[in-house]
Every structure is written in structure tokens, then in C-alpha cells.
Length: 429
Image: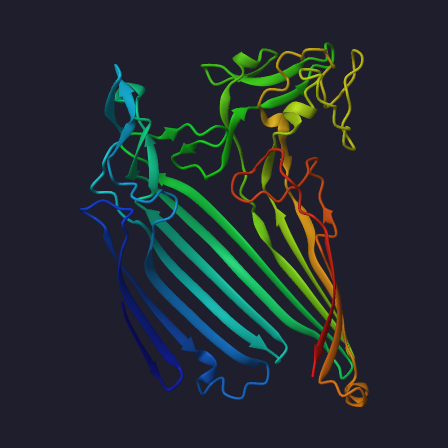
């Protein structure tokens, strides 16, 4: 590993690094990877034209570019060919191949470009803004193989994904008085990704409801589009795209078109909010997290909102604004209840996609530090009483157990976040 930094007059700072990493996960031909980074920082506030500025206390510009290697997501020694030696053939101990060797399996490489600004205003408000572009090449992926090959997959470096995003952090002293202070911190992040390359001439790889497809965001939903309920019959309707491109409705699930429906499980905006209020020796600290824009697949509803297909399960209560079809002319969100199911209405479709917006109180704590005058009489160095709670409430319109589903966007029988209450005493002598 090599690192070199240079600074001039506390205004201009250049940082460089280089490292060569090796991993036994990779093939014998490409175990090692070379990674580097270059960064430049300009302390603008140290320039003469901003010296002693009344409003701008700190201004810093940052620019960096570098590469990083990733070895996660695959098993140890994934490049090695394996044989199974525990079977028999015609009563004779035997061996057969179970994994293909890939001597050229190597690092997944991310090329990262970042532009950042740090600003402090009026000695009370701090703002940090980062814009990034990250292109990840040679993705580690288990490429499926035909069954006739005798193998399920081979681990290879294939494909590329581009991530672009913005991260913003605000921190400010809203109130600064002798006995009362209010500190607020807000962070927000936005990330957009796109699959830019796959192996060979492949443009589509099946992966349940979220396949990999060129020029599509990861976690894009691919399913039949739900059109609602037939007002005359109470039967389900889906979208059917004809060969000439025209669109029609159909009550036959198997005729409905599998398609990208234009939404994905990635949040458009996410982050957290912290509030710290201090009054004399009393401090209240609260942290909220939030997410907006993600569409979540509530798989629980296939069982508990199945319109009679699975009568051994209890039906979930209909949320506000939902209604069950009862008679001709009803404009309802739910098809007619039929014992045994209503024309496959419980099968996967955009019917079970829901808005995953939420605001959650992650933690709130209240603490009190006893005054020093009382502590001196008791011959104590410090005494603090605290009470805290985790996950007190979540504001959301999601009908499932929990909308906080990082990564997959598919909700199964997930155990929800539990509430936790903690009381404590801290003594120092």
C-alpha cells in the first residue's frame, strides 16, 4: 500500500493512494487487483478574499476520483473447480464434478468520481453536499448454465452498473441561548442506478419479479399490470399488449402481458432527521428516518388478501379506501369473493405493489444531569438519569407489517421492528 499527501499553505491539499489487494476467492490467473485514488481539496475560506468574512466561516471544495475492489457476494474459493466424493455408482465409491473452474475470476471494480462542498455560515449552519458518479464493472455474478451442461451456474465477471446520486447534510444551531439550545441535523440521499452491460448478447436475465435488464434500474418490477375489477362481473382484469402494440384488458391471467411496469423498489429520497433540545440540565434527543418513492411488493397479501383462493388463511382487514365488489355497478378495489379463488386474482401482479413511503421514530431519549452543587454534597463526580425508546411509531400507508425493506423490496412474513424501552442511571465518582 502507498499513500502520499501534499498541502500548501493550508489552502490546497492533494491526496493520493495506491494499493494492491489479493484474495483466494479469485482464480489463479487474476487473484490480485490494483486500486488507486486521487483527491484535491481547496480551502477557499483561507484565501485572502474570504478571510474574516462575517457570514462565511468555512468554505471547502473537494474533488476526487478512484477505484475500489469488491470481493463480496461470492463464496470462498469460488473460482476453483469442485468434485463431489461422497456418492456411489453401482455400489462403487465415485466422484463427479459439481462446479466449473474459472481461473480468470477476479475483482469487481468500482470507478468513483465525487464532487463535494462544505460550507459553514454565520457560525451556526453547516452544509455538506456531495455529487457522485459510480460505474461498477466486472460484476461478480453466477451466470446460469443450461441443464444439459450438468452445472447450474458458473461464477464470472460480467456486466456493469452505473449509480449516480446526491447526498446532502444540514446541521444547524436553531436556538443558542444560555439555558435553552436547539440543534437540528437533516441528511438526505438520492441514488439512481442503471444496468449498462450484460454478458454476450444478453439483454435480459430472469430473476423472479425483479429481473436484470439492460438500461433498466436494478429492482425494477416485471409482472402483469393490474387494471382493477370488472364493474359488472366483479372479476379481476389485467393488461394485455397486442402484437400491434395496442393495449386491451383481459380477465385471463395467462393472457396478460409480462412487462416492466415503470416502477422499482429503490427509494427516490431517503435519510434521517435528528433533533436535540437542551434546557439547563435536561436533554431531549430524537432521531427519525424516512424513505419516499419506493414501490414495495406486499407478498403477504397473496395469502391473506386472496379473494377466497386460500380459505384456510384469515382475511386481512381492508385498508381505508379499499372495498369489495358486491353487486353489478360497484366500483371496487377488490374482486368478488369466490371460495377457491376468483380467476387467479391472487397471483403475482402489480395489484400487490404499494407505496413504501414512511417516517419512523427510530429513537428518542430523555436525560437529566444533576447539578454540580448537589453532586458535591453527595461526593459524586456525576449522576445522569436516562430513559429511551426505540421504534415507537411509524407513519405509513403501507398495508403490510413494515415498509422498511432494504434491498429486495419484497415483503414476506417479515418480523417487524420491536419497540424497546431502556431506563438507566450513570454514576461517576
